[in-house]
Length: 331
Image 1: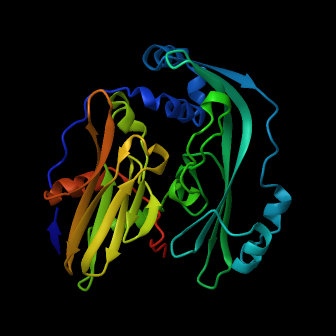
Image 2: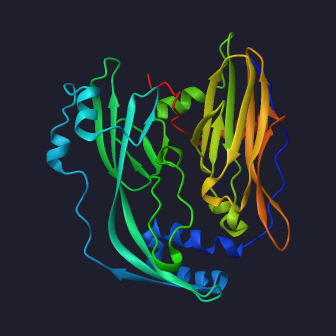
């Protein structure tokens, strides 16, 4: 086994970007427990120049009913029957053996007033409902789980790290840009057994292995803590790993093109890319970072750094969880 990898990037300076305030509000909405903490509310008002007030409303109906779930039988229903009942999935993972269906359930709204920007409006507080279905090698349903929100675990050991939905805004807080496709925002961690296998850092003789992870920023680094992008590997868009995840790709030798973009933050982000020439039997590590550029008009460049210190690369991977990819084997 041969290892190749570059040095860790420098630390980001403390920053609160004024154009980022609106997404920060969305970030809090998706984690509604923050709204209950008066200290957090005071900090938001002080640093972000905004006031947010929860407005109770009658919650929507649960999108996936018991009757619907009962119609999909483990060990009996086929992939074609699932698609006939539910339609095409919102996302697929693990060589299309995992289907993910997602729908929001609005449970409340918040009123946001950004007095420094003279903007106000309503934002939905949504709970993300996910129906996660895994099929066996014969395209028969093996597992079915209905999970709500992020940080939830399925019966087969997958973990929903990011449920992937973006709440709707109204008035001045209405989104000016469409969020990226759902498939590029939902983050599922693979099972513990798959994670352990990847962390053996083994490369087959006729293949190369690439690990990709994102630098972890503290809350007080400002915008980099909240930014999420789209990773593209050899032309295939994938979800951001998030700060606590990593990708593990077993690839053919040759040149592989990897890029980072952020369609949802197009006015804030400068895309970045890297080409990596992979040799058989080698292991590579890539660290994705956000680098601040400019002073008065701040942008963030998405960097993809090939890591030269393999020991440091393995150390960083051990801190993170394997993100379920389109090409992740579950067996």
